[in-house]
Length: 338
Image 1 (cartoon, rainbow, N blue to C red):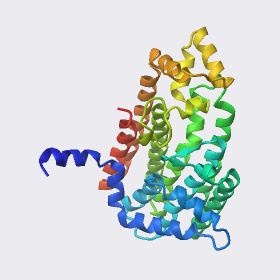
Image 2: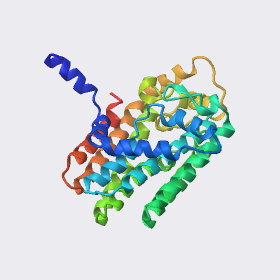
Image 3: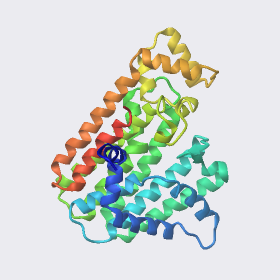
Image 4: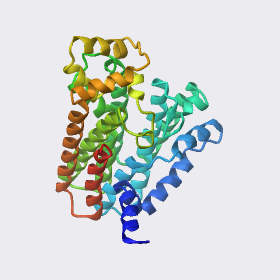
C-alpha cells in the first residue's frame, strides 16, 4: 500500500481503537466475564436480550476507561476486569431502561430490545444486570469501590428522573441541563475512571484527577451527542438523526436557542416541545432557528471547553502511553462534530 493509503487507514483508527489495542488482553477477559455473568440457568430470555445489546457492536468505552486507569498506574491484579465488567453491566442496564422510557425503536443501528421483545422483558433484564453488577463489585472486597459505583447508579437514576421533569419544560436552563448530563452520562464515566485508580492504590490527588477527567469527558461526550442529533450521521451517533427533537428533549442547542427566541420562535418551541404538536417540516424549521442563533456553534464551544478540562486533569497523572491516548480521546469525542 502506498503512503497515501497508509495515511487513510491511520486516519480511521480512533483513540478508542488505540485504547482497545493497548488493553486487548484485559478487554478479552472483560468480554469473557460479561458473557459468563449474563447467562441464566432458569430464564433463557435474559441471555437473549442481553446478548442483543451487549453484542451489538458497542466499543465498550466505559470499561476501557476503568482498565486504562488501573493499568496506567501499574495495577497487576485482576479486580480491574471485574470492575470494568461491572461498569458495562450498569451501562447496559440503563440503556435497556432508557429505551423503554423513551419508547425508542433503534439503538446502534439495530431494533431495540423493547421492540424485539417487550417493555417488561427490557425492564426486568435491566434489573438483572444491575444485580449482576453489584455481585461483581462486591467480589473485589473494596468498600470504597462499592460506595462509588452504588452512588453512580443512584445518580444515573436521579438524572433520568430529572430529565423526565425538565426535558419538556422551556424553563429548563443550562444549569439544569448540566445536572441531567452529570447524572445520566458523566456519573458513570467519572466512576469508571475513579475506581480504576482506587483498585490500583493510587494517591488521593491521582484518584481525584481521574474522577475529574471522567466527569469532564462524559459531559463533553453528551453535549457532542446532543449536537449530532441535529446534524450527525446515524452511524456516528448510533440512533436516528432528530430523535431528540421527536422525543421533545430540551438539549443544549435548543436551550440556547430558546434563550434567544423572539415571540414567534418561542411559540414554535412551546408547540413542538411542551405540547408535542409536531408537524411535517418542523424539524427543518427547528434547524433553521438553531442556525439563526448560532446555537450549534455555541454548544460546540461548550463541548470543546469540557474536553479541554478533561485533558487538563490528565496533567496530574503519570506519563504513560495510556495517558496520551486518554488525552487524544478527549479531543476525539468533540472532533466528531467537525
